[in-house]
Length: 73
Ligand code: SF4
Image 1: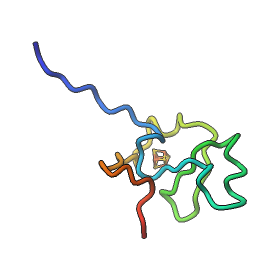
Image 2 (image 1 turned 60 degrees about the vertical axis):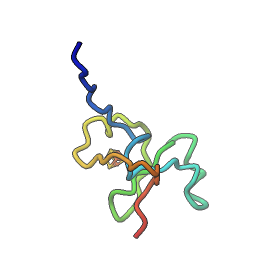
Image 3 (image 1 turned 120 degrees about the horizontal axis):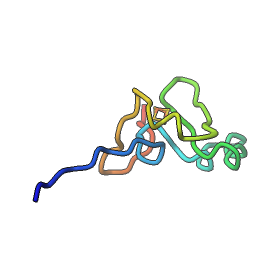
Image 4 (image 1 turned 90 degrees about the vertical axis):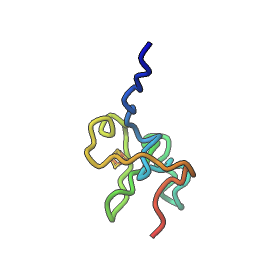
């Protein structure tokens, strides 16, 4: 039996650039109910209404084993 690895399913939950909007500073976290994830890939964070954009995002990068959400600058 072959040991095939499934391709990684890309999403906000496993992208190192995404952080739950609830963890954002005030007043940003108030958007969490409608926009549960925030993308920090660009200079200006972007709240995501859906994570569908992450499924085909060319800038998706898997989080490392520490689970650190957004890279510290
Ligand atoms: S839009 Fe792209 S870079 Fe941003 S959180 Fe989703 S997959 Fe990551």
